Image: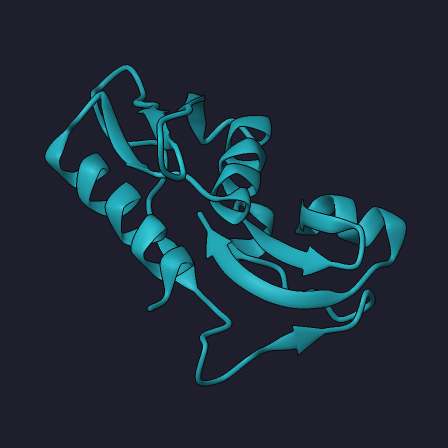
Length: 129
């Protein structure tokens, strides 16, 4: 089961339906992706509530003044059946700089902008625009 792909699909579906927030089971990978989305201004905030199992994460989506979801699209780049790795100097540009990538590096998950500043490569998790 691809938990990152499921997380991205839930964000897409909640944005298309116009939901203010949605809940999803929490994991460290999902929390890291949510933190990057908050830092880049694509999501308002997120909270993690602990329960007897793995915890529940609530993600609050962001919309513009006209009510359109800020995230136009999320695309899963590296899949369980086909991993995609990039070097620090070959990180792809998303929509001519209007979007960004999320990379899994040896220093944790980070956006492509931070990875390019530090010249760090890794697994290309997804593209956001």
